[in-house]
Amino acid sequence: MKITVERNSGADSGTIPYYARIEIVTVTVDAGSVFQVPVYAAYVGQQKMYNLEICGFRVETGNPQDIPFVAERLLAGLINMARLPSYVFISRRAGGIYPVYTVDSEVFATTPGGPVFRQVELAKVREYLGDYLHEVGILGEKGLSDKLHVRGVNMKTLGLRRPVFYLKKRVPGQVDFWAPVFESGDGTHIYTYAADARREAPIKAGGEVLALRSLVAGVLLADNRLKDLYDLRPDRLFPAYWQRLQTALEPAGTIAVNGIEMPLYSNASLYSNGLVWIGLETRHDENRYSLFVGKDAEDVRYHAAQDFQRRNLKRVYQPVAAGV
Image (cartoon, rainbow, N blue to C red):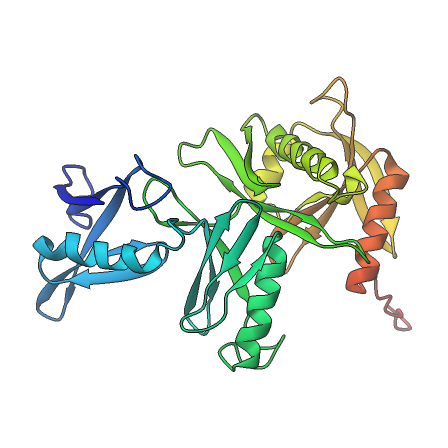
């Protein structure tokens, strides 16, 4: 590993005076990779301090000449099985960060001085890790005080990246599938990890959401981890992603599920074949959108009803007061 400090000549040099250039030579399977990690400057009292963040972990020093030393020490602690983390889990209230590594068909999460949790599904690793952290009191009382959020690692800056949406399969009696989807650093495609490999789709008028869903559903079906192509669906899209996709869809009325009315769309204008129907659920408490997909309107209704039943979600009818 070779780490050098380069001065930033850009307009933001006041807050980011340097970049730490990290070249991976032989330490990890990412040999040949080069990362540009921004180094921020801020005053702590009267002293100017320099800090950088790698995979969510922050280190600082009062001397810019020490940046390679503190960066290398942090990286040495993060590398596991010759790998940098693919993701990290974050507990916001407790403040913990837990690296997650990808090895062949498995992902595994580590805990400081504690157990390692491994599984083929990221959702299961999060569940196992969350249960353990609740049991030892780090997250407080289970289900009430805190939960783990996933972030991806930007493989250019080693900073953290929020998912733009998730691909989810939750079917009773079957193993869950849950994978965060991220936008690439250059903004040209979206990607996720599924069935032992990185899967991606070029950004194209919102159609990338359905294209990636279809791609991942196909590989999961071939891997016997999916029985119905439409059990996999995009979940918790940010508003910008839904708005972009919506402009490429054709409205097709509404459907009612458990007394809840959902707008219905088709992707007829996006594809001449591979027609799918889409039901929209607005997650008002999160300002996100979840989609249900199917081969026709009734199939969308079936998948939405199955998920609503799992979540015990239904419309609550309030009696109208007299005289109102």
